Image (tube, rainbow, N blue to C red):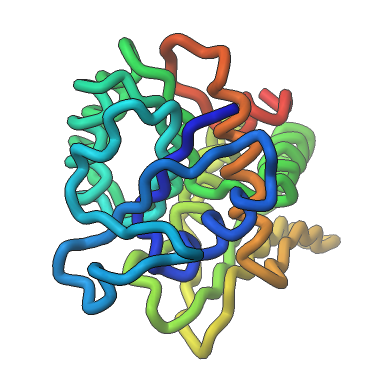
Amino acid sequence: MIKLAVSGCLGRMGQRITSLALEDKSFKIVSLLENKDHPQIHQTLFNLPINSNSVTLKGVNVLIEFTNPEATLEHLRVCQKHKVKMVIGTTGFSVEQIQKIKKASQALPIVFSSNMSVGVNVLFKLAFEAAAKLGNDYAVKIVEAHHLHKKDAPSGTAKTMAQVIEQASPRKVSDIQSIREGETIGDHEIIFESPVDTIKISHHAKTRDIFVQGSLVAAKFLAKKKNGLFSMQDVLGLA
């Protein structure tokens, strides 16, 4: 059984991760973490105590982290100390912050992905194949839409799409349109445009559970890993 910790447990993602992990016999939740200034910090979630002190990570096997870059890096430091494996779904990192995650993965196994969805990671693979096969006369545009509360733009997923396309071809993807409106969970579309045709690859998230389910798959993937930096492409065997 995997001893699991969930960071940002009172957020929308954190609550769903906790809920679905409780239904999965592969996991035992031993720590729920939240910001010390959260108004519900002294309450419980699904009858489990909520903590702000990361010392509760001691003895945990895997931490799932969907918070912000600063909180993630603080927990990364504690996870290094206590040898806790990490699934990081946080986005918005700077180049320097990503380097800290890469360095930590030399001693700690980490799944780090801008999008934990199985469907989106299949889309990454399709985007790579399309970019590799289509000629240079195809211009590329990415359009992504999220809820009003999302702070970073473009989304981490859109940035990954651009990186995948640039890895597969000599193209430079500079046309990324970000939309922030309503409660959109996550829509992404890649458009390959030529003088003679248009090719579109898209993904629409109906529920946040797609990211939750992927993060739990990633946590199981880490069970036998001793160190290394992995993506969801590695987790799903798409790399």
